[in-house]
Image (cartoon, rainbow, N blue to C red; front, side, top):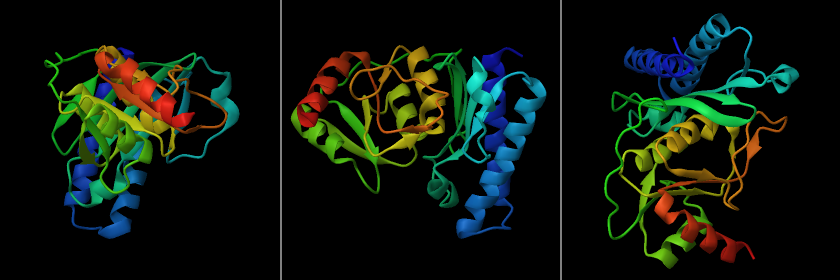
Length: 244
């Protein structure tokens, strides 16, 4: 399989596994999230070690090492993005599988198992026409103050949603135009969504407009903007005003 085919296949199968773990009835509450994370992670890590043994690997659910830092090709995965939503049998959670090459998100797949779909960098879908009023996806429990302020300025409709992957893919799928996040994330939260978004012609960057760079020693990423290209300049300008 190509890298893109492998990413999509692994994301889909991991999603299926997670649905089966949840539907088994063996776990509830936090135990369900833990079981799902561990089971999906074991599959993803084992499969990538088997299929791409020479590449580096970073997963939210595995102990990180310095080995990946010397690799040009590094897979970055999040077995369950949105553990709370997964446990509540919602649809706004995701599985992330990305390949970053020299720090850039080159290839990726984001599975939305609750919807039965996989968005992938090698099979972009057509973007719909822009609506007159933009829609901005934000956390359903703790919307970032900066996102709320920007939405007020540009007249955007706020849509609460769960995981980072679900919010990013809402833009890809045409359910929203802007995803602005300032509350802090890690590399596994955005690597696959960024790869998919960029392949669809969307804008993806830090909120100061700088490129997203992965496979850093410190995996913390404070902020993210994924949006329709038509809105990027204005949103970045509004964020800059807030930050000064």
